[in-house]
Image (cartoon, rainbow, N blue to C red; front, side):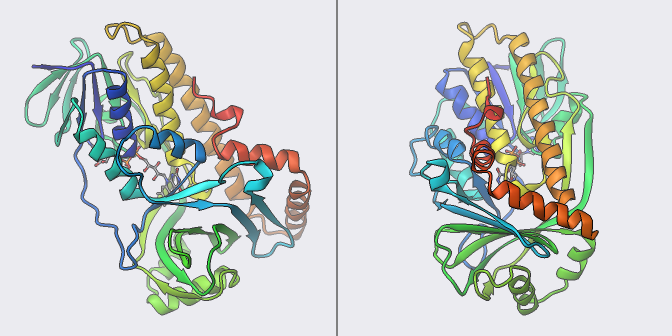
Length: 390
Ligand SMILES: Cc1cc2nc3c(=O)[nH]c(=O)nc-3n(C[C@H](O)[C@H](O)[C@H](O)COP(=O)(O)OP(=O)(O)OC[C@H]3O[C@@H](n4cnc5c(N)ncnc54)[C@H](O)[C@@H]3O)c2cc1C
C-alpha cells in the first residue's frame, strides 16, 4: 500500500495547480488523472476553449511554475451593450488603476504548462481513477487495484466527478436551458485589447487573442437558438455573428469549427463530505460563463486550501475544523456567484417596455457612478473583499 499525505484526483487546471501547491509546501502527493483526450486546437491555430482570467489568478498561476508562461492577451477595455438598449457600459483599466482588466488564455495551454511542471517534481502522477473509498481506514482503491492511504483526498475531477459520487455527495444541478458555443474568429477590424459583450439574441462575447484581428467567441444561446445555429455552415455563421455583434468589429471574415457546452449551475451539497475529503473546482461548483468566473473561483478554492495547509506546522494534523470553515466559505461564495449570474442572465431577458426602460435607466445610472463601477470591476479582477480566501 502506497502512503502519501495528499491524493488529488483530477488533473485539469485546478488539480494540477493543487499538486504544485502541495509540492511547494513539501507534502507527499499523488495526482490521479483519467484525461479525456479532447483535441480542441482549431484551424486558426488557437484552442477553441479559452479562459478569461483575472489579473489576480494570472499572477498566482505564474508563481506556481518555472516554465515559460503560457501565452495570454491583455484586456484593457470591456464594452458591454444590449441589442434593444440605449445605454452601454465601458470598463477601462485606467479607471481601476491596474495593468490590465483581465487576461485571455487558451485552456489547453494553461493546463499543459501546469502539467509539465508537475512532471518535474517529486510527487507522482498516475493515469488511474479511484474505485473505492474506505472511510474508516482512510484508504483508496484505484482502478488497477492498488491501494493508497492518505491524510487528505482532494477531488478536482470536474463537473461529472465519479469520486464525488463515491464520497456520497449529492450534486444539485440547475439546467439553464442554454448552450455555450465556443469558437475562434477573425474580424475586419483589429481588437486593440478590447473585449466586447452584447446582450441580445443570447449573450455574445468576443475576447481578444494574441493575434490582432482574432477573437475567442463564447456565445450563450437558448437551446432553441442553438438548434438553429448548429445547422449553419461557416458563411451563414459568420453572417449571423456579424449581425449579432452590430458589426462592432466590422465583418466576421473567418470562423473556426464550433464546440458547444450545455450550461448548468451545479453545486455539491457539501464541499467536505468527510473530515478528510475536500471537493474543489468544477467538481464543487459550475457557473454560467457570462462573466468568465468559473476557473477563477476554482483558483480561489486552491488558494484557500493553500492557506489551510500552510498553517499546519505538522503534516500529521491537517486541521478538520479549518477545512470545515473553508468548505463553508467557499460554498457560500459559489452560491453568491451563481445567484449573481442568474440575476444578470434573467435581467437582460426582460422584454416588456416598462422593464426595458427600467433596465436602461439602471445601466445609465450605473455607468455614471464611478465608485460602484470601480468596486464591481475590482471584484471581478480578484481584488475585492468577496475574493478573500482565508
Ligand atoms: C463555455 C465555457 C466558457 C468558460 N469560460 C471561462 C472563463 O472565461 N473564465 C473562467 O475562469 N472560467 C471559464 N469557464 C469555466 C472553466 O472552464 C472551468 O471552471 C475549469 O476548466 C474547471 O477546471 P477543473 O480543473 O475544476 O475541471 P476540469 O477542467 O473539468 O478538469 C477535470 C480533470 O479531471 C479528470 N477526471 C475526470 N474524472 C476523473 C476521475 N474519475 N479520476 C481521475 N481524473 C478524472 C479529467 O479528465 C480532467 O483532466 C468556462 C466554462 C465553459 C463551459
